[in-house]
Length: 148
Image (cartoon, rainbow, N blue to C red; front, side, top):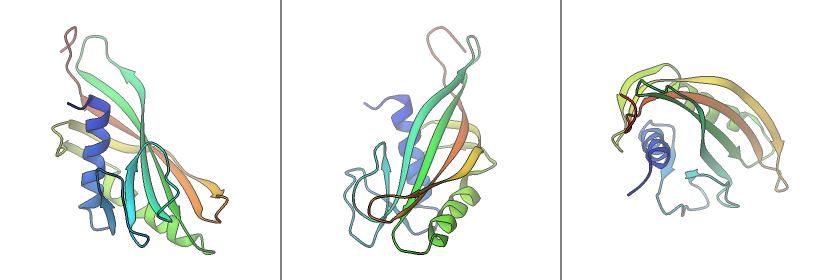
């Protein structure tokens, strides 16, 4: 059984993979060299094209069932030209920003999601792959024992 945060990130990964941006979600994290993979947590060494989703807490109502979770989305793209990583980030923005009232494949209900900050360039890594980061806030319905 996965926890709330894992289910949120996995659901977003599945949604991005189905969004027509050429990205692939594989729960094992194994991808071919030409794939644009989606992973949770740490950025792997391969493939060169990767989307990494990392969650963090923002706020929780003490009595209502609303929680705001941050989702950092880092993109990486190999090659001398930085434009493809910008294009990948723009595609993600088009899919996620402003989406409302949606239930992820993992059962998490997202009231809304929007980009809070970014994109911020992270420059190039040691392998000369371009990287950038954006942060999204997802307001989710998260009932618990002591609230809504």
